[in-house]
Structure formats: C-alpha cells, structure tokens
Image 1 (cartoon, rainbow over the protein chains, first blue to last red):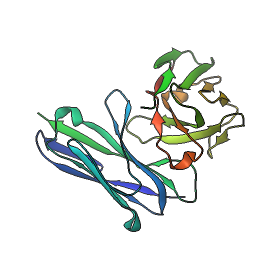
Image 2 (cartoon, rainbow over the protein chains, first blue to last red):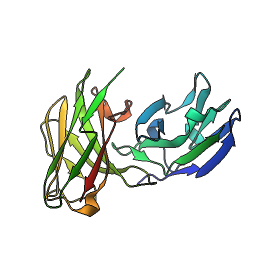
Image 3 (cartoon, rainbow over the protein chains, first blue to last red):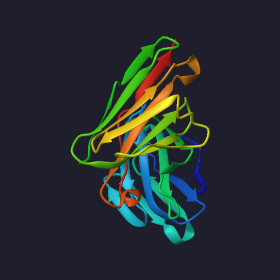
Image 4 (cartoon, rainbow over the protein chains, first blue to last red):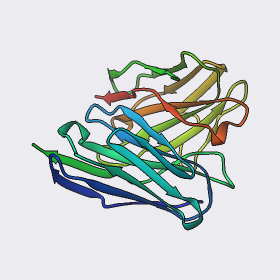
Length: 109
Length: 118
C-alpha cells in the first residue's frame, strides 16, 4: 500500500516564527488532507488539497502531485498552533485514507 | 460545513463489559464511515470501513468479533467494543464521507472517544 512520511517528527519554535511541514507519499493520490490535532484530541480539517496551492489566513499548503509531496506552511506561529499535524492521503488505487506519523509542533511563548 | 458527532466523548468501563460508540453525520449523508484507533503519541490507525447497508471491511489484525461495526443508516454508524480489556483502552475516532465519489471527497471527523478499561 501507499506509504506516507512526514517530517520533521518534532518541531519546537518560538512564538512568531514561521515553519514548513512536509509530507511525502509513495504513489499517486486522489485525496490529500492536512489536519491539526489539538491537545484534546480533536482533529481539525485544515486543507483538502490533492494538488495545487491553498491559503487560509496564516496557513497555506502546496501539493505537487507529480513529485509526490505536500507542504504545510505556518507563518507567525501562535501558542494555539501547538499540537500534532497530520497529512492523510488516499492512493489512486485504493479507497481508504492513510495517515502519516505526524509532526508534533510546540510553540513557546 | 459538514459536522460529525461522536458520543460518548469519554467512557470508563470495567474489564469484560461492552461499550458502544456512536458516530453521526448531522448535516450530510455519509455513504462511507471509517473507524480509527489512536494510541498515545501515535498516528491514527484505520480499523475498519463501513458502508451503509453492508458489512464492514476490517483491516488486517483487527478482530471483527471484538469490534462490531453497524452502519444501519446513511447518518449513523456504531462501534461496539465487546468484552473490553485494559489493552483496548485507546482513543477511538470516526470519520465520514458523503457523495457518490466518496474516496476523493474530504473526510470529516468526530471529536473522538477516549476509552479506559479498568
């Protein structure tokens, strides 16, 4: 099945810093989403982005499907951005969504 | 936006008892629902996929007789953990997709159920 790798696994930043999170996948995809899991376990849907670029406030994401990666950019980080960021994909030959191992982001005040 | 409601949010039960977790799509019809399990500091692992009106498809290593899934309507799926044991303690999360082309439409998640078996 499709493999999903996220990097870095952990990231500690000061408030106000910018960050880039990466998601690599091993096969072509029909679906790619970025999620933020807050400390209470809630999964917040950030972007549905199988290709192209999207922006929402301080967050933006780019997926280059032909090169099999996606990037999540967080600018001017806030402490509320802390949590785990997951990339999840559906391979073009499958119908179930597979999660990467996540990036744990900690923003220090 | 699409809302998925999951209940209960937290449950503590004694070893040997059964626990039912409900997952409802509130404002859309979910043709497919997924159940995930997440252990501390780990990613979400798919347990099973359920389609309305048909039997669930379980992932390898997931006991179908222990984790009973029912998807009786387009808005409700239930997961029953039967004869729970302490090793079943985990965070269980459901998700739902709607539409005719489910696999390439966004996935919407419930808020999860934290199960503790004593």
